[in-house]
Image (cartoon, rainbow, N blue to C red; front, side, top):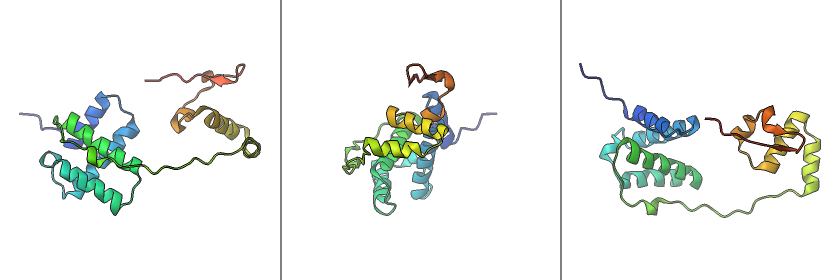
Length: 162
């Protein structure tokens, strides 16, 4: 008896795991592909092309009003689906790139930062100081361990954990 072929989303998950993608990337990519399939009436992505991807991204930009970075995330999921799971290349997708609005960052002066830090407990103060001074992402901060901190030098060393 022949084994039944895996479902498309399971194939995508397998391909992402083979590339050592994080679980958050895996879940987000699978979710975008699922939404894409549902948007097009449950048609298989193998039957669709660049115009279908463009229609979905246009829908996201217009009616769903999602940010440019979110549309990039969806586009990346489609590109991964095409290249890795469906093993085919798409036509030019340059027209699908969204432009991000330019914004100036809001920056606190040193005294304002000190006042904020003075109102935090020790644990929360340490987390905010690490974020403010390091540029670490949320999950990187949450995964810091005591052995990663060098109290003598007032620094830390983030090791890559696979």
